[in-house]
Image 1 (cartoon, one colour):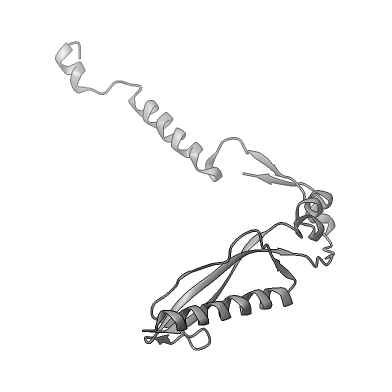
Image 2: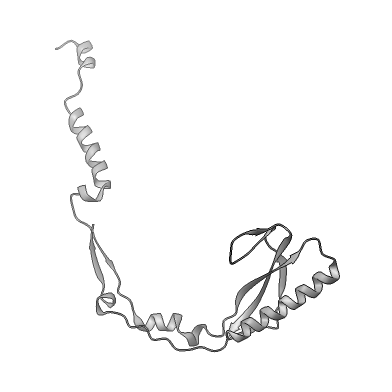
Length: 163
């Protein structure tokens, strides 16, 4: 064994230990094999913070984009399309008004092409002779109604997780 050429053929004595250390490193990545347990805390829910952020009074007058659709027969002349489009816009504004949404008249109502062919919303059948258009505009909800949500005591307390 004193021959230096034979030393190159033999593995060094710490090879098994080195491989074991490398394997232990991989085991540390898998939570159930970690040597030390890790703890983390999920904070409890704060009712006052939630009500400040999501209350109906806070979010009532913030404008949002709402959309509606209408369809027209294809082909259609421009005058008939404009009449149909204006009627759909007025119906959309009236429908949103009945639900408590007020149109922000400082911004325009836009109409853009939608799906072709249009799809019947009730049956899901495509209508090859119709083109769908999307109407969208900015609206504000002006009839806030307070909602009371009660949080269970265990949801309010922080939760300790052990990994």
